Image (cartoon, rainbow, N blue to C red; front, side, top):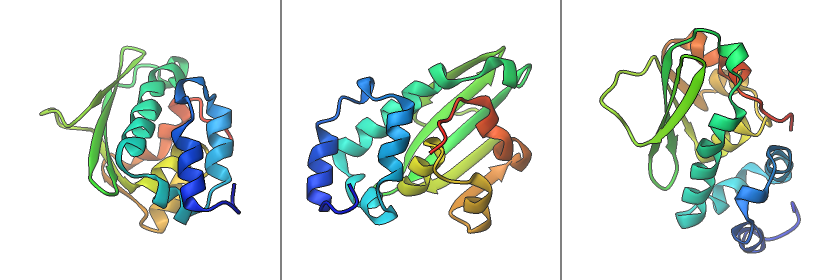
Length: 157
């Protein structure tokens, strides 16, 4: 896909049935796009669809055996054409996700741009590297944030 124009990529991705795309296929798609291409396609309804699909899958990708007795509210703030907030609650061996900001105090908050978010959730980016380069900002429990990937089945990009 790297040699296609952003318009071609947007049209191709807009036609995808995200419910039918496996996490491994999603990782392959993200890996095949440059940071600029990822940024260019994350607009409007397409951006909303991608974010909802990714967060919607977190419940299925959750690894309760890895989380054990962990209880935590994780707030995700994805920046781009607008700020989108989602919250992931881990408690009692279950994971739930809600769109929007609650009144509850999160144990950790992660702030990143669309591109970094897509790379992180597809296994194509290192959270430690993103943090060191200030592309991922963490407020609250940094230890929890650094280990979040172990609680989810994330494809290896």
